[in-house]
Image 1 (tube, rainbow, N blue to C red):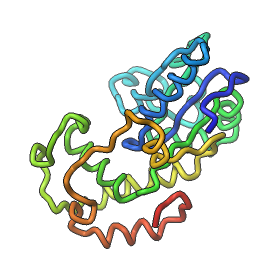
Image 2: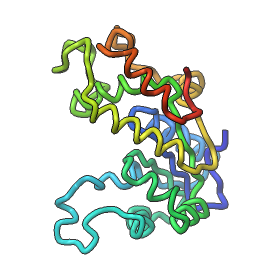
Image 3: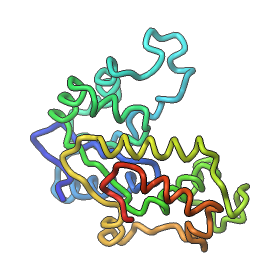
Length: 222
């Protein structure tokens, strides 16, 4: 799998939360160091996308199709090979579905799309991640979090996850990498062990699975 392209200014990994973007970013960084390529790790681009305070007195109070290029230029000022991730779903279609933005990003960055094929496990991980106030990796048992199991997610939570997945599916990228393949190739990447399967975790497992089956997506283990 191609992790970088030295004809471009950097690599950007695009994926949903809990899909392994940080581990893949480490893999890209390790590969660059190994090959003695000077790099700058910019972390998560656009992580202020939901911070209303930052844009309170700004003319462009939110990210849009019309300022996304300026936003990336502000956050990526590196002169060496830059690497980073985009996991904030409000920006995906702003890039891939608007020709000017798509052209800029594709010409300047090697874009990697990271997909987690086991969609039920992915959704379960996102639910737990949110329930722990984003301290997901530090818990040792689901008894530590304030969530009733079996859990029935509100429809808004399910819809947000589905919408984000569809935006990722539409995203135009140079390389597609699967989370499940990363598990097999990175010794330091370990799945969280909850002691429950998604079928045991979700009170309406069959209903959720049926919703996912109706989505027009290809990267999905049915």
